[in-house]
Image (spheres, helix red, strand yellow):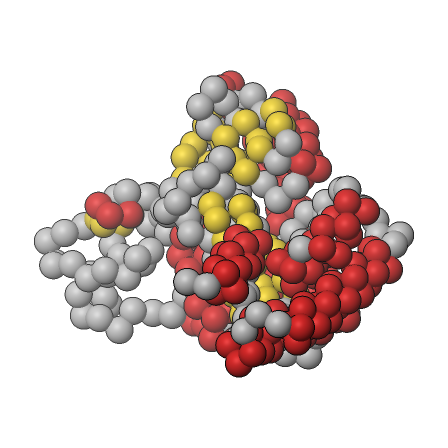
Length: 358
């Protein structure tokens, strides 16, 4: 490899590293622009790093804005707190064993369980909230969770947040796309055509000028932001001299903030309808169909919150909980079919099967 090719490979690797983020393993990320339907990005939850999982943001231009969401990670039960660690892993911690403490963005729940959240402020918020829940009665916890759930399921607020992020980062994302094309496209073609020479140095000088412009835009966009971006001026200095930081400058603005993220179902109208409906069905099945569901008259508190949301949004029950078309017993949680002599789904922890009508 020539020196130019080596430098190109290094820039590409550094750019991909800058596209990676360490997020909560159950987090959702939406990527899009102001007037488009946003796409959903999920972390690689099988890979656990510092109680979180890596998430790859949208890489190729046109660069997109990003906004995050979190499902309900903490659900109070009668004798314990149910904690969602990943999409497929949940544990219960007895209230007398619960000892929430925040350390940076990590929330320690007991001696062995910890969970990464979006920001140190959010970790502190949940540490205090769980401490309060621990001292309350079951009825108070139930009421507090429903209040929290209703606030997190606000499609108008979620759409407004996404639109605001897209507008705020529009100029940064436009220049980032130009930087990407110039760095990995035009300079590469010029180097391949002319080799080492003055014209390549001139193209590199234009790249540096674009980076300086991006640094100025970053300082302008982030001026007066609340909450502010940590080490804002140092980041601007890095944007001025490092191409990978300049191309991902909008991410620092999009993902900044200490406010509590919405529930993913609050993205109704923001993401594609079929993606949202599939997510709604999965959330409902996981919340409603737990072991003992067929004997319990009252539905779980998580399902109660979802049911209230669906009613507010005028979504029919047959849309989020469609009847099974199979003539065999079906697990209402995972959809697996069973022979007639089987009564529970072992893969779902003993969830009772739903039998077809006679």
